[in-house]
Length: 388
Image (cartoon, rainbow, N blue to C red):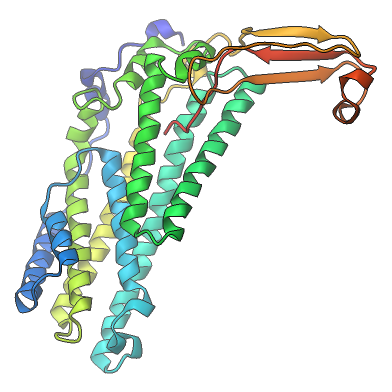
């Protein structure tokens, strides 16, 4: 395959690709269950007015879901964690913790079943997101020089992700809520998307990096540059698969709202058998359908035309000679002055010994080294914040 055979990744081009992957319709019962839970929530609110927190939950449940596919995936993940927080045994009403009556015990059994299903779905979603991130990064890495520079990019990504995790840990340790944590996670995700767009346009810290993406088809760079555009090529994906996901988002929001209200008012009004059955059915259908959607969209992503490796794109080589090589005799020093064009750029270098042991060089220094050292300096900045 050669890059001459590639065509621009336009909306029409992606529409033809998505025609090969029709999404099975979401069952009509999903919408009906969400409406039923909203009605039950309204009944609880009529008996006891909303608190400010509950008003916010109601507004979110009655609002319009986010437009982006990945933002909805993060929103569903957040809601699952919020529901699991409510279902935690230590946070349930005392009557349910003690299983005071047979009715309470039956409700506890149902809540335990809901908790199990949501935990399983949450884990599956987390794995799905990690796999997608790795797929994008590994695809980009196939275009990188397969030497110490490629290794540097991988190390920088790992370092960057550790820093991002440290930010999340700091929010948690300072008493931040689940919502606070996910607001940060989504901001970090958008930062990655912005940098991905910079890669496509060869701007910012990626201006130098693009030179090392040997053989990258221009059509791929053009697509990446438009990845965040409201009316760009990715809009076709949102139009095609978004409505089904939005329906599931509305359902999980309705589940959370009703569960929050019913547990908060359990001392005033216990959950009826019919009502707990509706909740259980909603969780069962939600986890089943969201699981199907995740599997489906994962297949669409992995086969998408914008996931093209260097080998598939026909890149001739991943080598690049944009470095200086200098032989430094024993007892001598060599100074290199470099200029970088962006903040947080990275300078890469490598060196090797023709004779002697590396440990001798590190301990005694060049002055005492009896071997000849080859010192390689890469000119240019590297920065990789995790392209996913």
